[in-house]
Amino acid sequence: MKRCSACGVPRKITSTHRWLDNGTMVETNNPDHRMIFIESDNIGGVFTRIEEILGLPIEHLVIESQRRMTYDYVRSLMPSMVLKLFRMTSIRPLAKSVTELGRLVGLGDVELLSMRIKGDEGDYVKLGGRNLFYIPAYCGMVVGSMEALSGQECSISYEETSPGYYEVTTSVTTHPVELKERFKPREYSRKEGDLRLPRCSRCGGPSALAGYDFLYDEGIILHRANARRMLFDGPAEFEAIFSELEKELGEDIPQVIIEAQKLFVKSGFYDLGEIMDTDAFREHLALRGLGNLRDMEYGEDHLRLRIENPCLHLLLAGLAQGVFELASDREARVAWELAGDGDLTVEAS
Ligand SMILES: [Zn+2]
Image 1 (cartoon, rainbow, N blue to C red):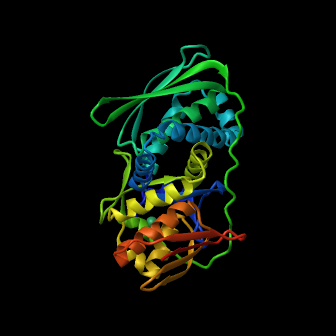
Image 2: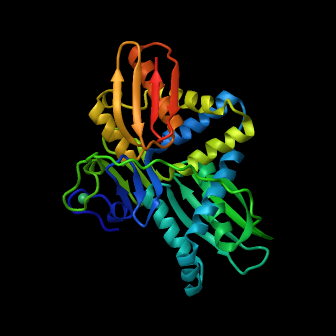
């Protein structure tokens, strides 16, 4: 794997992602597809806390919505991929490039274990993996990709075969994929910005990425200073999971998500100093592709943020509430609003 000789970041990371000056990150080849670079424990941590608050498992909902998002996403890439598939004598090289990409973006150390693709019942693909970032979302990605590629409905199962090592199997059925109700991905605002992240003079990627170790063999990305694990993913996948939860479990869900994120933040995960410093927090959010922090006002009795081009706004609201409660050492309320132009205002008080 080629790395930048100046900052050490894999070339493929900085060539396939673009950090724009408006606080967003997109795929270079697909600028409509927003991406985030996020702490993987935050994702798993929020879902675990949602389950604790609700007192019921949500794994099946996470798998189902991730599967549908992945299916749609892979299908949208199909024209060129179909061509590639026809040129291939086997699906194996494709599986190989998918597992390589997975390692690179921090999904985990994944490998193809075995497969049978003959176009009839009995077809399956079995992947092995350790360091998987969040099993239900990973399973949804695997089964969604397989359904998009095969055009057939697939099932998914996983098993921890040795401590920390999972085998994930997707089996192809003889039923064509039924066109389920499609997710309408959130439309994100795209206001212009003038945010200048410091850049590596050689590869052009954000300089801050030099502070992370891209451990390709392990399939993980680690912040060198605090050992937090990071992940590149699409925010729309998580928004879809959140709206699926709301549809299935009721209108209280946004509040539950904010509460889950607040509890996670209050576990002391983030560096409070970095977040209470406006310039540092602006960079923190922009590096993650979470939006453009325009204003931050912090007083004894409130913390107020205005963010342009936000994504995962419920997590941002929970972050603000958690940070304010930590800083003020008391319980706070949080109010948030997404304006017509997409700006997010959050106030914890
Ligand atoms: Zn570089």
